[in-house]
Image (cartoon, rainbow, N blue to C red; front, side, top):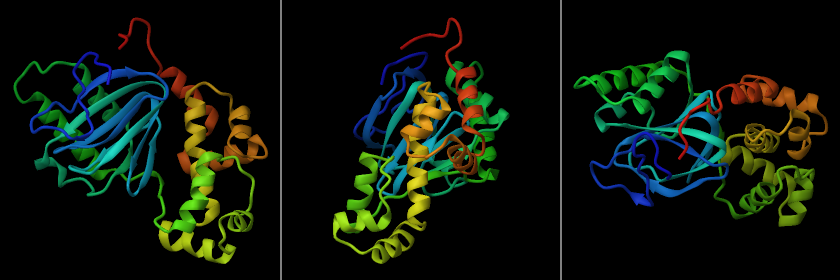
Length: 270
């Protein structure tokens, strides 16, 4: 990872005990971190831009108003969308018990945002100050509702063949029956697998996938209309409705906030 302000250490496989897991850096659009794990928990916050965290259980997307949580020793990878002001924050094992034991995404309140920025921007001036502020962060997250833009991934080969096709082209307009004919499975079987393996309908899974891609495009500056067309919606109105339901704000407002929280004049580069 490009280094900036503090050292931000991540690597393939688990990091050595005591390695620094926190810091801040500007990363270019499309930057990836390969699968790795940490002996401590980790919070990753995109103060500008957006990021996707992938694990064996699926993918979580965090736009600039959310923070991702990964428990200790949980293998994961990251991909960043837009020019991203990424903040990495280690959570000592002793504090991890207050948070959920699986990867997740939480909303970032104004207090939480300022605490995350302070912990990754400012050197510790008084002994124990960072630990005290980190405890506040954990308390805030422990009381926050999960807001996971989670896209689960299947184990069944037939269902994986379908989701692979959609990953390659999220805008693919083919029905579930049409996809079934392509992979050699009935619509009824695939519908059942979506519910039993992924806990959601085919329509919901594809909508979430499209919104994952839409977040990346909006973060990279594409207009709402062009994003809707690129991600498979027949018109901007239906895209706006779906995006607002899942993300909690309109795509126009999200795009505006991304631009407002973008690089400020004089901000350091990697």
